[in-house]
Image (cartoon, rainbow over all chains, first blue to last red; front, side, top):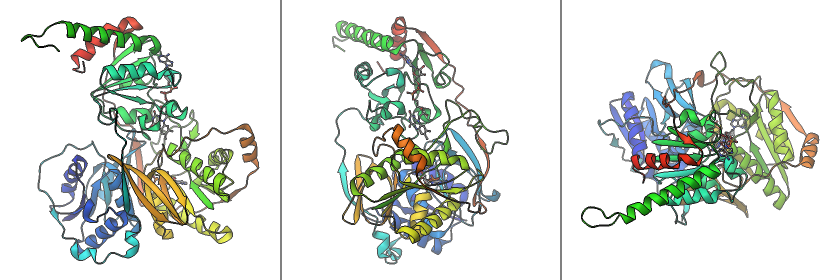
Length: 304
Length: 254
Ligand SMILES: Cc1cc2nc3c(=O)[nH]c(=O)nc-3n(C[C@H](O)[C@H](O)[C@H](O)COP(=O)(O)OP(=O)(O)OC[C@H]3O[C@@H](n4cnc5c(N)ncnc54)[C@H](O)[C@@H]3O)c2cc1C
Ligand SMILES: Nc1ncnc2c1ncn2[C@@H]1O[C@H](COP(=O)(O)O)[C@@H](O)[C@H]1O
């Protein structure tokens, strides 16, 4: 059996490959960067042409932004159904699969009624397994078959990010504030703690909707998804849509006045009480700790 | 300028997903309803475009009778009129949803002229199929860019900015076009009391399309098992600070 895979750089595509191997021993790949500058309709058109040629039993990609975009275009142009962000999929078996809904808070068990399943694989849900790699399709003969309108939607410019500060997605520690912080000014203590820990500031949607923080700080289903070593949630109730963004944190510390808050089910540690007292107290304690470290000479005479 | 926004009514779930007894939907007895934040930004953008360019903004949904509430919410923010394709509340897959929307768009355009710009959410809040907007664009033979954080129409085209690693990719599409947007596109306004009163009098066109056989067919829903964590309470109030620092040290973040 033949299977066609749309490949990008990064782990998500290796995870997709792990699932793709179930669909066929003969694997072929088209690269996401097969058309430069990136033109999603052109990549979808290439996939459709290659699929007509190789007749694969399924077409798979990683459930990244570009993966989901191009596969939806492929489905639309071929008139086939498309299942995004699958966590389970078996060939045959009447197209039975499991996919993510609501960020990753709910699973849908569904049947894909299609002669050629078009599937993306939810990132971070498959352990990458070693195995055979797909052979890359030589797309040169297909490129000439693209139509002008396939190139209409294309990247015409890239604007680099302003930079500065610790990136939310890369921070090892994220200190996040919710409605409990109370105001824009209230975030001073959150910023202070994040600064002491070399981390980034995050927030809940209530905070961005109120205009206290920019949307780039929002963690969750419609914000940023992060996986830091430590997530400190201050005055955040732990709605499923918020947890969809931070569930993959290694450890979660909840600071909340309500012992019954839903976040307690997902947290590893908790401090109960008013964050306006607790957060500054933690910052003060960290300063004390750092001062002691600076005072005590380490073995070998070096200073920390 | 004429613009359309497509929205979907979804339950406002809280801290926990609870399934209905047949596991085909969420238990919504005690829940309020809303639309995706992505779509809220689409509504806000459409209202702003018409405020500055004149013309007409329209909101469309395929959903149960109760979805009239979400259409009124959108009109309270400034959308001029609504199209409601009424269902019995059962699931429509993305392909069927897109086909119904295409038909409604064709009918509206035949009656009152073409939409310059059609807004979708990048993905719906509940089923998250990542495709209805792209399917509609394909059927209408219009260009579409997805996941946008900035949409600026000017002189027959629209500049679209998409967040990617390290910055933003820019697409410039000729109008008419379809765009799918993400939260962060703008900061939506809150509805005003006069806005709500005006919304009650704005027109809603209704129809009842037939539901085709689904091709991505929902069999049942399941709530993923949690990680089975049990929370360790480090203390109460500011006196817990030393215990927190101890934890930070052990975790290697200090
Ligand atoms: C489709 C959809 C997508 C969404 N996407 C996101 C998203 O991406 N990100 C997101 O965050 N939300 C998202 N939401 C919203 C989400 O459902 C919640 O409404 C939101 O996360 C709640 O924010 P919060 O926890 O700050 O506020 P609340 O739920 O109001 O919780 C405030 C918490 O603070 C505690 N508290 C109050 N005062 C104090 C104090 N002084 N000290 C300590 N604790 C205190 C309270 O006990 C409470 O637990 C989405 C919703 C929908 C429908
Ligand atoms: N039932 C519906 N009625 C109107 N618009 C919808 C409906 N379902 C989906 N959409 C639109 O299509 C977008 C993408 O949906 P999806 O493909 O399900 O992720 C949503 O954000 C909405 O803008």
